[in-house]
Image (cartoon, rainbow, N blue to C red; front, side):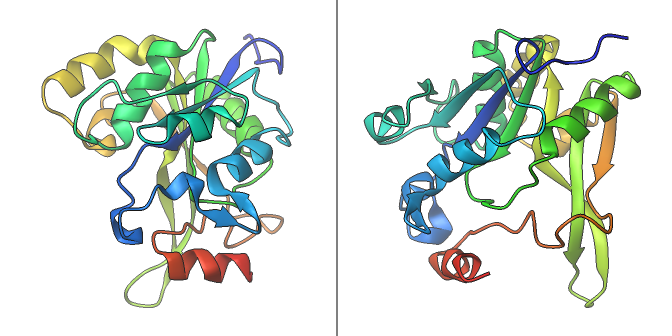
Length: 213
């Protein structure tokens, strides 16, 4: 079985195309985190991965010039009206020139540096089409469970045709699409995994709280 290499097999996509509704409509990827725009912070995090992606792209729908200043290609959604993360997935798969596409959101500043490598090992080791991260989350009842993080995915680029059919048929939910394919869930809940590595910032208050963590 062929294993991915840093130079050829994986493109990474930063998802920064949302409305930022819970942040008051601001462009979330351009909000400062420790003096650096969130999307740029995600880019630098990808550049520190233990398995480096060959290329990185950004999916954004506003302020394209600001994102282009980060030095990587920027592509808006292929679907209209802020159709959600799957619209970003579709844009990434349409532009991906490698066999695999890694997706990460712009609002999770501490995602693991081993993310790319561990998802690739699981996907190839189990001959899956999608590898999805999972991480501990506290539920409403106070218990902690390991839950999938569907925007942290490694996808085979050959899934483009499937996603085109799904989205053009009106599908917008990630889980409904990924359930159609062979997927492996990769838990990040080991003793060496930071418990809050997948904490995200939906509001400006949450962003400030993450800065102080």
